[in-house]
Length: 303
Image (tube, rainbow, N blue to C red; front, side, top):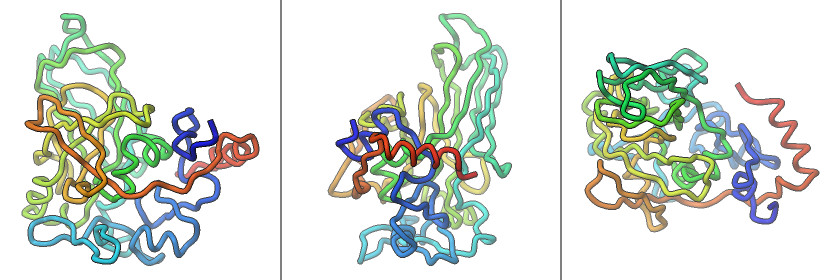
C-alpha cells in the first residue's frame, strides 16, 4: 500500500470526497473533477472559471461535438443560474420499504431537492427465498475516490458519465422476477430542453453496473441501451436484473483506442467495449503524513 498511486489508496479503502491532497476541486465542472490549479481546471472542465459545465454541445445526430485539439467532447459552458439540469445530482441517503404484493416506487432526491433517481416496480416484481415479503431498499451516492479511481474512473475521466453514480442495496437477498425499472436523469441541459435531441442521445446511451463499487478493478456490466424515462426532460430507464451501483454512459464518448471491458448480461446481445483517457497523477495517501491531510479534507466535506 502507498506505492501504487491513488488507485492503490482507493483499493485499500481510503475514501475521500472532493479531491486528494495536492489537487483542488474544479467547482465549475462535474463533481469530483480535480486539477493542480485554476488553469488546469479550465483545461479539464473546458469552461472558463466564470462559467459552469452544463453538458455537451451536440451535433444533428445527438452525439457530442468532439474537439480536434483534445479529442474530448466540447463542453456546453453557461452561467450557473442558466444550468438547471446539467449539474451533478448525487442522491441523499434514502431508505424505504417496498412490498412485492403491491406496486411501489422509491425516489431519492439530491441535496437541492431534485430527483436523483426513481425505482418503479410492478406487483410481483421480486421475492425473498420464494416468499413475497417487504424489503428495505437503501439508496446512496458514491465517494469521489471510487468514482475517480474505481471501475467507473476511466469513464469519468473521459467525460462519458452522463449522470451521478447511484448505489441501491436491499436489506435482504432478493430474486427479481421482472417489472422493476430504474430511472436516472441525464445531466445534459440541451438534451433536457429538446425532446427530439433527447431521443437521439438515448440511442447512444447505456446504463452500466458493478456489483461491488469498492472493487476498483471490477468489471462493469451493461444493463442495456437506455429507454426514455420519466424524470425531467430526459432520463435513462432500464429494467433492473440485480441491485448494485449504476452509471449512465454516453457510448459515443466512451468508445476509443483504450477500452475498459464491459461484461455481457441478458440485456445485451454482444460484449461491449467502453473506453477512457488518462489516469490521475500518482500519490502516496497511505503514508502517515498524507493521512493527516486526508483527515482534514474529510472534516471539510463539500456540500
